[in-house]
Image (tube, rainbow, N blue to C red; front, side, top):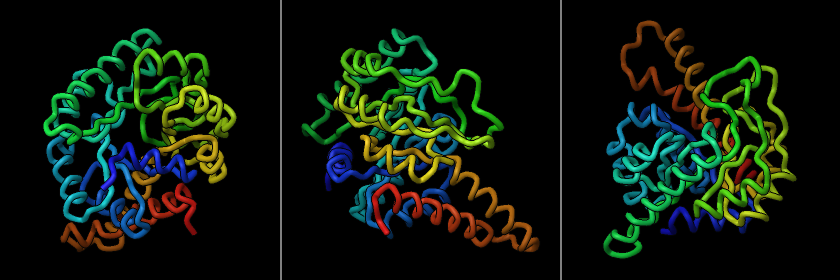
Length: 292
């Protein structure tokens, strides 16, 4: 099987994007995997710091590896939005395929410093791993603040939405050696009741042409279909979705409990929630991969 790095390169060559979906429990993993398997496209499972603490690092690594190796399916695990070198290191040591250091709230200099520390450590682990090439760890970083939290917001958070400057992206990548970059190009984390701004696809293209590494779009929930397709055409290789599937899970679970007040079997109560997640993920994966 190809590595995640190879699948990302292939996605860029095909003009498609890999879907990244976060989980907090086994039901979400089932829904996401079933959708990806149905469409036969690679998928990335994300765990933020809070999700990682709840699910467990080693447990998550074990589940993803089991699926990948037993089913020979391209499913990968990402340490999403980690805010310190120590947390990134712990995820790398546990066996995550890719990690994100989120220093978007830091000064440019401090973001560069910690990101480079993460990159250097990942390279050290890969170099010392035996046999050579057994582990390939991708490090991603953020530049430009797009807010935080996979929830529903009334308006765009104060301070969020400042777009990444091309010159800053170039300097950042050159100074850190990071594998992937998540720039601020118009999206905001979470769902915004007042509506999300359009993605600046021209800025995406300019950054991509300048830095020459894969770009990642965060805050995908709630964006218009044309924003996704324009962003992919401009150079986005991975798209993050979280709030949409959390909302689908929540609504389906509440309805299941209301419709079946006497049901006590967990898997029967939770089945509609799994199906709701699968439906959302399948729809997004079709769009990202240009499938009908």
